[in-house]
Length: 116
Image 1 (tube, rainbow, N blue to C red):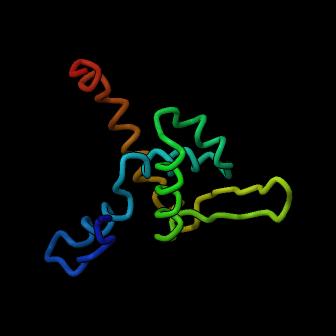
Image 2 (spheres, rainbow, N blue to C red):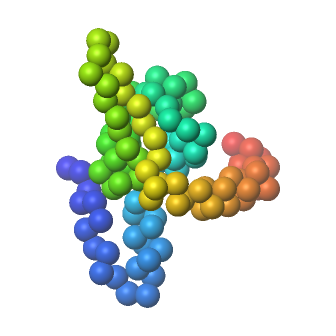
Image 3 (tube, one colour):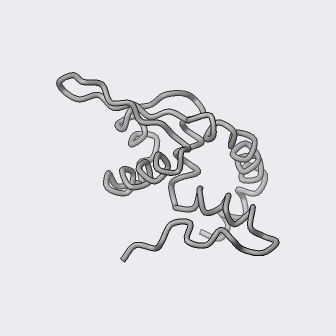
């Protein structure tokens, strides 16, 4: 059974952080958003950038990001079908957050390699 999405955003003092994290939680969401900062991409392009993700997981994460208004999905009526994903204005507003996460990861990557 799937967990309820954004079931309780009426929390106490930590609510804004809880709400923000609830939108980008998931193993691949931040990475997808980070790659979409470069521009519009098709599903296959995202798959190449994320070799560890299964097609099903990528589809689910993209659907949730679209449902939450962080990305837009454009379907072109052609054969074969063409679908493109890009950041919405709301998703683009996460650029400083994603940049900060990347900077932190760059500064501390050694901690993670040592543990592996």
